[in-house]
Length: 209
Image (cartoon, rainbow, N blue to C red; front, side, top):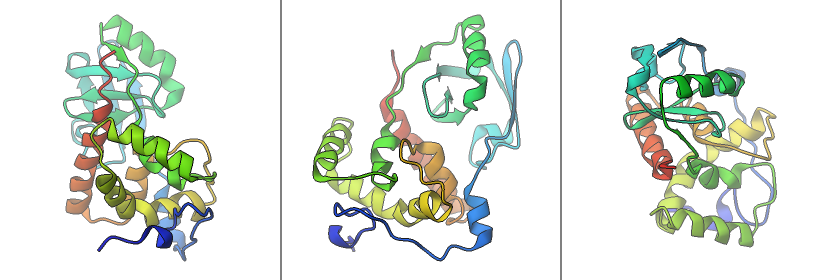
């Protein structure tokens, strides 16, 4: 059953709901991208945090496997097939040089997940903001019904992630944030399904140019 808008923690009246989150879960909500090294024609990943990812299993990805690179992402991403893999922003210069050397397209991908997660930022979320975001999301095929379903699915974990941890991010929450938050809720099979759905939405931004 759909949760009424005025009972959701992200209601338009402002404020948020706090939860009794255990110390163990609070610690697990923060995820590091892992140890990444960039070679002349490959990128190597150790300790990549998301088990469904190719970077978790294959570890070394060749330049010719990479579809494109988004240097402006938060964090930057490389696309392998139908998946975006996160790279620390501190490696942006090195990543840009890698893209140029290997003739990999550099794109500016629309950050669909930041629009979906804006209600969970530590900032005002009013009717005008809601209408603006609804219009943007609809232009990428995400209906109001679909948006409500996604936000209802992630809302508790995102509020734990941003407020119970005292992160209090007021600027940006994106695909990596929602994956970090939801991995503590779901078992391996459920998280693999959620990971796939996150990537499907993230790739709606395309990044063709």
